[in-house]
Length: 345
Image (cartoon, rainbow, N blue to C red; front, side):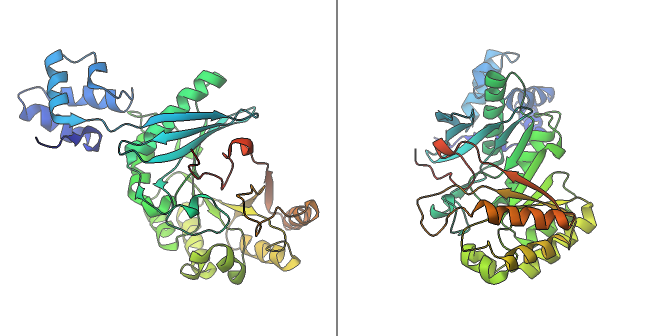
């Protein structure tokens, strides 16, 4: 028996060609494409504008490898964490983060992670595989439905800050964003999408060359190589000098500010020299800083810094005209906060 191909791996042109080759009209391919992406249906029987014979032919030739929301956890603060089951039985997590003014989808791009950040629960899982573009897209579709159900409005923002390093799955991430922003997909503005990277210089430059329209965030956490080497060991391969050069290149090509994500830990990066290094790094390229509350992952090596240390960061950044926001984490009671996604389910 021949193995059926995942229909969502086909372009619209390939779908049109399939119908022509099978003695039908090319526009049928357009109809199927709309059902798959704009209407996001997961069965051929749901494609009600097609004849039964056409639906049967699709079923004989193709599969739709859609995701399933396996379990849902709801936090006291309204955050929702989804355990997403993939067609091969692997599981990733995605999160709906609500505030008074908007709802944000935090999506995963890999099963596990390629990198080795010491403070992140996901990094303790080995990378099993990259997600396909449609699996990323499906997460957004699922969270959009939850946003409409629980908050009475569509999803307003998307952040690629779930499991995995997005730039290590570049092609699929870009394809998913193309679908999310396309009028034939979800029609969301690229300005409402942020891709967060731990800092892969070569791929940051590639994004700039590809003239992407979404926002860039960098998980920085230290602007001193020796400190960053300890907490993010891959920094030895991609040191801050290379990251700085890539970010300068990004800004030159895109003219868009960079957001630095930064957690302050007690005894790790809470000294005066850590603050000075961050201020200096922020001045290389127009940027802003999100100071993120640390979310414990059963590791005594990492403890949230004191309010005094946090306030020192804030006052020094503001004194140097650098925009700084403090992000209080949501969904901590269900392990849905930043750095906690680890498939405990």
